[in-house]
Amino acid sequence: AQSVTQLDSHVSVSEGTPVLLRCNYSSSYSPSLFWYVQHPNKGLQLLLKYTSAATLVKGINGFEAEFKKSETSFHLTKPSAHMSDAAEYFCVVSDRVENFNKFYFGSGTKLNVKP
Amino acid sequence: DADVTQTPRNRITKTGKRIMLECSQTKGHDRMYWYRQDPGLGLRLIYYSFDVKDINKGEISDGYSVSRQAQAKFSLSLESAIPNQTALYFCATSGPPERGTEAFFGQGTRLTVV
Image 1 (cartoon, rainbow over the protein chains, first blue to last red):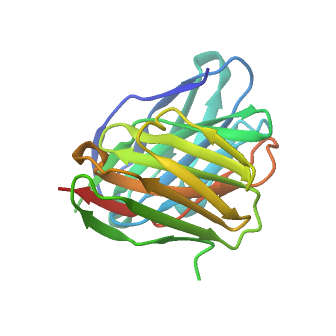
Image 2 (cartoon, rainbow over the protein chains, first blue to last red; image 1 turned 45 degrees about the horizontal axis):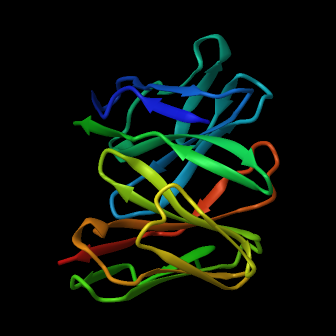
């Protein structure tokens, strides 16, 4: 079975400083991995996804994530935080089960950006 | 217009009442899902469906039922709501189970059971 661990429930950074949101996964094979963002009172928006091509994945709004198989990690980074990045972020692993992709969510990391 | 639309967006109901949450999609996807979000727990799968004849329980289906009225419509019912079903509910769709297929989410329904 798949599982996802987001190592920090809350992260606080100052505007203009780097962001690091950590995610570890367990999977019996090479997984598909995703990061979604949820702004307050909004749905979930896909930031980026890893599908076994390049290990460094670029997403929207300047976010990147690096797949490290040896560390079973898929950490999300951004060089310079913006106030609009304040949101909750979810790391997700998907698993094919019969005729479906099932999506397994981490518990989320709330990012606070200070002026 | 949103690809995945949930109604209502917010609902307060009393313990013991029956309530239905509705979801419709214009993505043309066969696969639809209902998730529940609780603080600190991420999203957990309630039910999922391939078509009107295919309904599958997720990890937390107790106390819930679903109906797939058409390819585009998937509703979630609480037959007798209880306070611990207070949560944010999301409907989602996805395409064929290929590598990298993502899920598309609605805006969510915030349900409060008092």
